[in-house]
Each structure stands twice: as C-alpha cells, then as structure tokens.
Picture 1 (cartoon, rainbow, N blue to C red):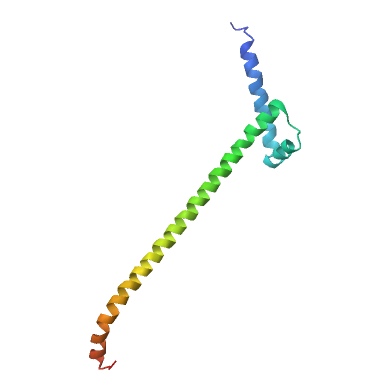
Picture 2 (cartoon, rainbow, N blue to C red):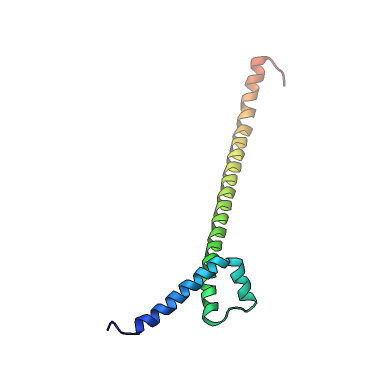
Length: 111
C-alpha cells in the first residue's frame, strides 16, 4: 500500500494550494482582489483566491462588530451619565424650595 498513488494525488493539490496562498500573501489583499476583478484567475485558482480573501472579509466583519460594540458601550455610558444628571437636577429641584425659606430666615433676608 506504500506505492498507492492516491495519497500523492491528494497531497499535490494541498501543496499547490499552499504555494498559491503563499503567492497571495506576497501580493497582498488589494492585488489579489484586482486580479480577480480583471478576470486573471479562473477555475481552481479563482476558488482559492476567494477562499484566501474570505479571511480578510471575516476579519473586517469582526472589526466592524467590535467598533459597533465600542460605540454602543459609549452611547450607553453617555445615556447613564445623562440619567444621573437628570436625577440630581430633580432632587435639587425638590430640596431647594424646601431649604430656601430656612436659609432666608437664618440670614434675615426677606424674599
């Protein structure tokens, strides 16, 4: 079974794919996208190029989600701070009219 050609046939596409991915790495994301757009890649190479690019698409999606989560957290924090400010203002609006007559009387001020 050591002379079985099937493992070689499986291994050759894996090595070819790996070599192609290394080539894509050297060229960079923008160049690979450009070559796809101009129709330079077809068949298996096109499939591998799209597979290789999907890594970047997934990373971009994750970055957008993280940015959205950060923005949501900042918005929630701002809303919480605004709620505290409103609560403090409401408490002051109740306390000041109650306390002011005593302060006026203490200092001898006539309203």
